[in-house]
Image (cartoon, rainbow, N blue to C red; front, side, top):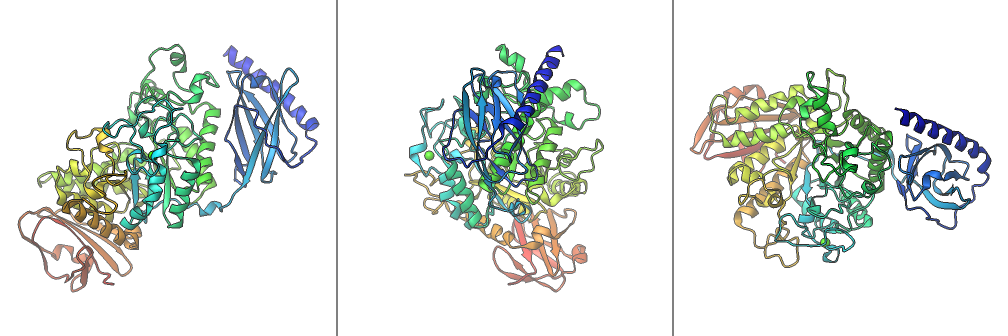
Length: 639
Ligand code: CA
């Protein structure tokens, strides 16, 4: 406490000195002709004018910079406060840029010895209106990619000898394989053609880690694209090319932890920059998170469990960031906004949502949504419990008053129910009743159609494996999820029945190389060359369904009515205006006739409906015959 008081006194004296200087030094605002770059690091590397929030906090890193006095001659920019860290090599400068115009200006750092260091900083002009950053919603279908494993367009960038992991080995599931950003851009045609409207790539920022750096979740520089994935310009090109097609690019961000090799771990700005920092500094083993995610909501949770959850490290190689440090909080918020603005993003996926300080996460999402009112953010809460999934969504009526500001959460509950419904034998409480009752839980959600649904993702066994290699069941899982009031997300390769039968659930194997992404691949899923008939059929099936869904407002926005499972079948209806879309799951292997009287309230009797997959038309009569197991999607819209 004593130490804190001394620190606070130092800070306040320092800022007094600053405010005196402000009036005496600011004399000119000449245009900058020569760029000066004397400092080791200033972040964010540049900023923009025209945000709602007209404050900007710069993290400045340079040997002994804490002893220097910064000043800005440009009168339209005010230094409001200068604050030191615990390390002498950092300064945090609060700027007010409300009156600033776009352009470059110099920040001068007068040192104790009288010398001056100069850093040129740029405020750019925003090129797009805030309201035009449109996030993803239920009209979208998202293609999830593990970028190292999708396509290698630039073999020259596979290895970067300045980074710790230099090896590339396609035979090792946990090594880098060479996929890159340009590989995604190159195949946007394929993704677009399948009917997807959004791309979510796992993180693309530098992971300078000695092992398993391919997965991207151990970021070591929050402002740098991993050179093995490409350059900033290539990332921007991906965003622009996607945008030209009307597709949205979703960035995967991580606010909970960084990689152990992050540059700041060697010289931490504050004594509480990461949680359990003292142990780390002493080289002691760090506390791992207890992963007790319910402690965020649990009204009986002990303080010890709450702290163990939010302050423990996710794993030893990923230091837990302390978002209760206000400088860390601002750093993370500005970093997210920087990427949205720099790339023109169409959404953020935030990793491990319940792990960071939850009050901070609410501020983080709130700050983003304030700048981009039409944006979307999806948070990963890996829970099968709808109570928890609902808690994190904006508008939830939580008994602790928590408002997350988060537009979307992930429906792990329905993911699991989908698998159980199809794998289990039908009985009173098994099989299709799982999805029937699962969907009934929607009464709890503030906004069900903004929740993301998926058959699998990059962290779990592939859906084809989860469904024991049953192609028909896989098709049923997909068609069911595509008609739900949700935002569907599909992991790359689902369309060609990629699987992990060899070692179910093995992360390296789940993230198998997409065939055709590498020069010389004997199979090419982009062209269809070498695919089996089953794979081609699944690709065509997914394409047909997604392209139907893409333009179908009834699925995006319509009402939902479903009926309790009956004789191994489950009927779900979506309606809007004149259109009714009917989705039927039939699990009977033998031919069966279903009496349609129980669906009379849907007023379909005598109407003509079209089978979305086959194009065949039928009249809704007294009963319906099913020859074999499978799902059927019908629409009353015949053109
Ligand atoms: Ca490459």
